[in-house]
Image (tube, rainbow, N blue to C red):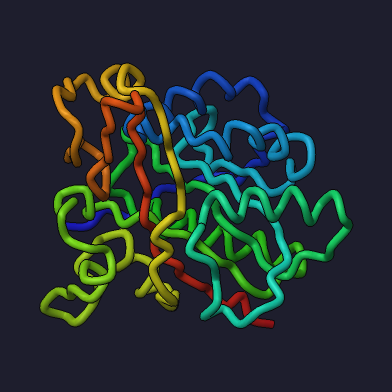
Length: 253
C-alpha cells in the first residue's frame, strides 16, 4: 500500500539556519560524491542565499527536514522547445546574470529537489514539485522549468537518454519513477539537455569520488552516473557530462 504524504510545514531555508547541518547531511546522503563537484554550481552557490533566499525551501516536520528544494528565478525569451542543451549549469549562470542586470523573471528553475533518505516512499517528491509550482505562483511566475535527473537512469548508463525517455510502463506512463511523478502532475517532457552539468576532475579526484581505479584511458561506468565518464591518463583528466530532461509545469492563472 502506498503511504500517504505526511503533514509538513513549508519553511524558507534562510529562516532556519539551525537546520544547516541537517540539510548538508541530507544532500550528501542523496547524491553520488562526484555530483557535489560541479564547478559552475560551486562558483555560484553563494547566490542562493544572497540573491535568491526566498526561493529556497524545506518541507519540515517539527525540526525534521522531510525534503528540500533549491530554485532560481530567470528570464527565458525563446520558445520552451528551445531550452538549451546545458540545463542546471546554464540556469544557475543565467539566474545570476539576470539578477545583476535587473531582468524580470518569467520562469522558475529547479536546481535540486531532495527527499530525506529516511522519508522516502512517502510521496514527498510530488510534494516538492507542488511546492515549487506554488512558489512560482506566489512570485507571479507562470512557468516552472526543471532539468530533471531521472532517478533510475543510472541503472542503464549505456542507454542514450534520448531513448531512455521514450520507455513506458504498462500504463503508458514514463518508465522512470521521477519522470512518472512529473507526468502525473501535468508536467510536459520537452527535450533532453545532454550537457546539463559538466564535472571535470583529475584522475585522482575521480578515484577519490568513486572509490575506483582507472588503469587506462577510456570510458568507465561508475555508480550513480547516468552516462559513462571519460578518463584520459595522458591529460590526467576525467570528465562527466550529466544528461537531464527538460520538464515544464504550467503554473496557470
